[in-house]
Length: 252
Image (tube, rainbow, N blue to C red; front, top):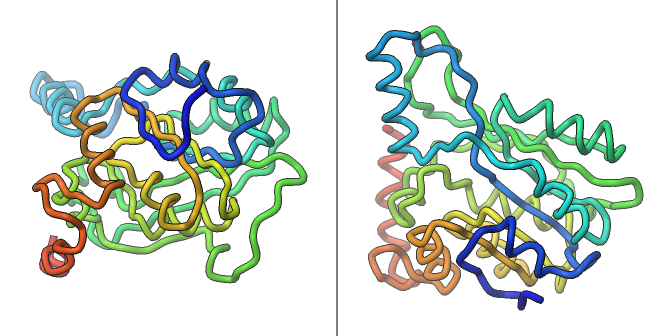
């Protein structure tokens, strides 16, 4: 049994076995992405670039879909957000929409200042998140909570404050969690990264359980949920730094 309002260091595939059946109200995850080859060429130089991107960005070969069965087991009803790469779309659709007969929505984060990498590929100016829920799971009322798209610059400020390469906008995560859970509910993120999901849940009066296998990101997430940045500053002193970085984002 895992306590709520705590982030655990370890392998999510093992830690999740300690969560009882039907005890989680909402799952919100941003698992390691699986990237298709293409757009970079097959030359030795191109392959070195791909390898370097994986090293710098922390890109892995994806995640083991066996954890989906565990996530379904621990949820009271299927109620889950999954950020994904293009290569992960079909397996997720087959599992949740095909096998589990869930309803589906697609949440899109539109970036106003994407990295200008256009070598035979479209700009990486959007990221998608599937929202799956089984019949009977209701969304909370509120016009502002129901939008399927979110527009913002690449969040350079958060990346610099918390030193994580794929951090999602806190406001977007809060909007999703507020739409799909209630105060006092338990939100699970088993690939917690820098801790955005846990921070959002805490600020919204939800309970949370976080899991992270990388010790560096685990320490970042624990500090962040307690209001401390990677520099050791408490959040009360980061407002001026965030304002300065927001100006930098506009010219990124």
